[in-house]
Length: 263
Image (cartoon, rainbow, N blue to C red; front, side, top):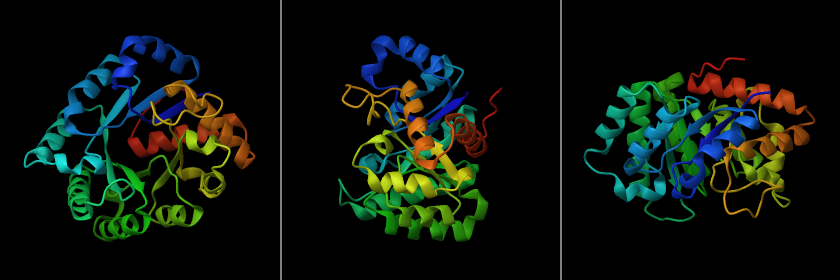
């Protein structure tokens, strides 16, 4: 059985003392590949170093919406340069809109669309952060989809929305990724959404070190090995076997991010 964790942040300081042990656990749990996401450009060197240290790690480059004020005149060129020079870059992000924690709406729109332009120029998928902004997100992505067609593709990461808004993004051919939140007792809407996502658009992730899933909830950090618990919960919700969910989500991740995973 093979699993792919499509969203991690293992460059954070709390992983550095025992990163080799963390790696040993993800390999033992059947995790054969990780997509390392990015918050802002100062992380580029540490993320790139991890990707080249571990052959099963690919990475994304981008700027998180809550860091939109860090966008500089040269940020686009920084993103372009790294994405063009390193074959381990398989996506842009995480990027998007967050109206829950910030109200700099116009700045977020500008930075988001600047990154969508880079992604379509490079023909790379995007990793989308969307919080309390589904309607606005739908409008932006629909506009870009109308002009760019299949060059605009990606994943709604750590999806916490209701089924209706998930369908909006499925209609735009986006993937929907579920994190440890799907295992939480009161996450009824997320669990309902997990049952209606098309099998060929389903992904799993940890978003570690955040959001440790049940039965690891309460631990001080989440880690990639725990994506197994996300897969187990989704299998239960959908009435499918763990093996089937693992195979489908791994195939989906390979297709979206252009990965070649040996059986």
